[in-house]
Image (tube, rainbow over all chains, first blue to last red):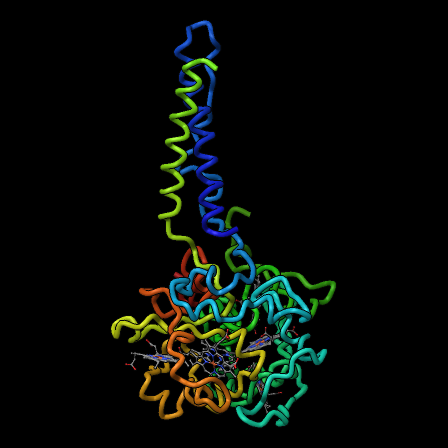
Length: 222
Length: 145
């Protein structure tokens, strides 16, 4: 829905509400015998979704996306993302394109060198498993998908020391844009409910129990 | 139709028109493509629209390595302090927007296409979608008295 149709549907709703409200206040004037109509008070502080962020409209053309200026004529020469994504495997988040699958299926062949279209990436297939203290599945970091896109020096040593479990990583650091969060949540797939299992992909053993907190173990009111 | 109802309809239409005008004035949240970067360290101040860099468009043509390892773009929106002087010297965008690998630098409006006044930011990042600042864990010492 674009801005104008949104404004129109919003104003229609206001118009109807205004009509009902008017009609109702006249009905109340009409006499004491008319049963009083009760309306729930739905106003600012008690709107139903105070904090829920609405999912954004998908893949809008540049002129309608809110960051490009439609007054700038060249904006209308920029490509519509959906035109570029035709035929690429889809996903449910980010650009709504599965970039890893697109490479694996040979649907895309981005250059590894600025000028040489035949240069090949140096792909390394090494999975790093990171056990997680919480109940979510353990994290598997796959070097293969990363080295398809990135070079070792993009991560080593600035973001990660190249040694298994030598780096302290936590979800909070990731959400603050550190560690995996340098890329994930910005360009590579975002951090949201639909993506947790892409990183948290190794199931816990069947008999795994979350460790009890010290406060519970020492609880005097037990 | 009674005159009362007519009056109601009229009143509601006026309110409706006012609401339409009001809604048009309300700033709409941006709905741009995930990973679009607005770069505006200097552009606004020099009377140019901010530059918009589309990751989706470039990653179809180049792997991250080309820009972030070979060309030395740091992983930080606005962090590269890009200027036109550097671009015409063949650095940053100028490594490709030179009339050889891609169209040349005289196409000012292709890059300078952002809404005036938009601050430097990374569009659609997870951090921006959080309702409150990200959770910071307790330090081991916080739980002991």
